[in-house]
Amino acid sequence: MAAHAHARAYTRSHIAESLLWLDGHPFSLHDYPYMKGIYDIEAPEILLKTSRQVAKTTTAANRIILDSLLRHHFKTLYITPSKDQTSRFSNTRLTKILHHSPLIREALIDPNTTSNVFLQVLKNGSEIALSYASDDPDRVRSISTDSTFIDECQDVDQPAVIPVVRECAGNSDFGYILFTGTPKSLENSIEHQWQKSSKSEWIMQCTGCKKWQYVDSVKSLGKKGIICLKCGKYLNPREGQWYDFNKSFNLKGFHVSQPMMPRNVEIPNRWNRILRKLEGYPSTRFKNEVLGISDAIGARIVSYDELVALCENYYVELPIPAKLMKGIRMVVGGVDWTGGGYDYVSRTVCWVWGLTEDFKLKTLYFKIFPGLNAMEDVRKVARIFTQTKCQVVVGDAGEGVIATAYLREELGAHRVFAAQFGGFERLAKWNKKDRFIIDKTAATDTFMLMLKRGGVIFPDIRQAETPIRDILNMFEEKTRTGRGGATRKIWRHAPTAPDDSLQAMIFGWLAMKIAQGTLEFYEKA
Image (cartoon, rainbow, N blue to C red; front, side, top):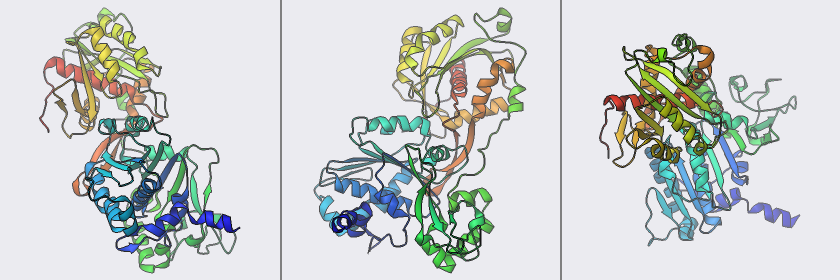
């Protein structure tokens, strides 16, 4: 019994309370009983699906520090969607705890070692790299890591970023990854992750009817605290425990909400603050930011009926029928290469546009390849663009950079251009080396408006159904990425809902602008 008690004493939560200081005081989990299980869990992949202001960022900082302390030469990568968010975490959480915890400072901080906002090199050889990636993973591609923390993961384009992040740990014996974020729409990546996770909830037993319950609805909010949905008696969040509602999982997922915090229940002013939010917030915002649950469907600016209205009475085939080429000014192509898949079957899609006499984009041909290896598709795609006599082709230079390079060898450098999505708030810039950098939001906005205004022609709906569904898989969300909490619109798609056809269309549209000489550039350092 004594040996067992001794072993339990040295959990990560115990070490945190023994060594860490926060805001001038020894760190304590007394008012965060639900966090002990999160500190102590050892799992390859963890998800914290949380409301705002429940100590998730402090938890991330503390776990990073403790992992760096307990394993010498341990490498950690921390990512948020924006530079400002990462800088804020580094300065106000990570660095403060490192330097204001006396024993941690003595053990880890070497005054002769240079550290900065984006890199902490510790005395025991451990490293903490801090970076940011919303939809362009290039910034983190060359970082080697044992453990990765992705904060505000709901605002990260996970199909684009996560495969690169996993490769950063490809040579590690650990390869841990922890996601933290506040849910948004039911289509957001964080909800997809939650559905395949352990779905661990903080359950509390009613002292009246003995029913176990957890908070995922406004029905659980009484006038003075959490109430039993069966008998109406108040529940005590201090006496809860974690329970996995999904017994078969690879991802350990914890749901944390503001009502779970004992101080929010025990201090009347804090509970009244929650009730005021219930009255004053829009329903979706309250569910996201207070209850920590997903709600609503992402916004779309074009409907299925509007896209069907763009379909005309013809079918595409090879060779392109002569009657389909009547009145076509020029022919261009775009290709989005398969990335190998991130929880959905990614595909290679090539698209051939013709510019009509009234300057509409007409679909002359398209092909969806179901494979998972882009290199196997290169020659097939090259034959399609050769047979359709494309004057200019644009290929994806993100995960498909190698495939696009081989396509250039097949078709000629004068015909094939590479484009990579980034985030710049303007449409395009040249990287002065080998590719265009395209703002994904600006490009998608412009193309969606072209669809909305009838500037695109599709073949018969029976042939265009799948590409149209790919377009509808994209939805708008607002994300805080700017300085001072400013918001920016971004386009996302659920990991189970591919957007490959839409991206191929957009690359083809960019090819048309290059061929016409109308692609506007801008300079940015």
